[in-house]
Image 1 (cartoon, rainbow, N blue to C red):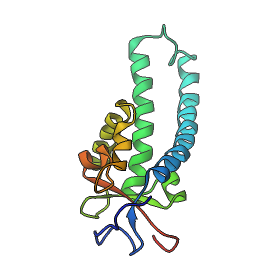
Image 2 (image 1 turned 120 degrees about the vertical axis):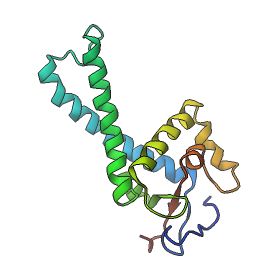
Image 3 (image 1 turned 135 degrees about the vertical axis):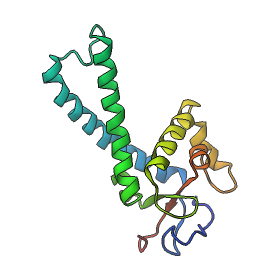
Image 4 (image 1 turned 60 degrees about the vertical axis):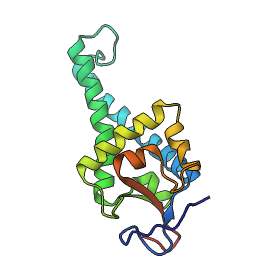
Length: 159
């Protein structure tokens, strides 16, 4: 189900192609498990200092907002750390896919935030932004297009 061969010189080996939907979802599932563990760890670190009130409905607004900001920072930090260093989260590494900019270069911090924000849009439309790649000529999702990034897959000999 892989799309056309990527022509960007920095996209990887000659065996690189745009990643299909199944690989993307499998990598997202792996990353979701890892992120759940990181979010639980962040919560465990916060709770002793707040006496369990960081997530209680009746806790002060500043506390709830600070806690939510911490969780968003953990998610952004996870993707930002991996995408700017190797272009692969741990889930993406397992499924041999990588995120790159449209020109084939590695992502920068700004690209990470654009991609994450655009991915929220893709999910908020009941996942239509992801399913779009099934109909897109270039096999791109909404967030690929909006952020100027691409997910490419690599064969067993790829990077």
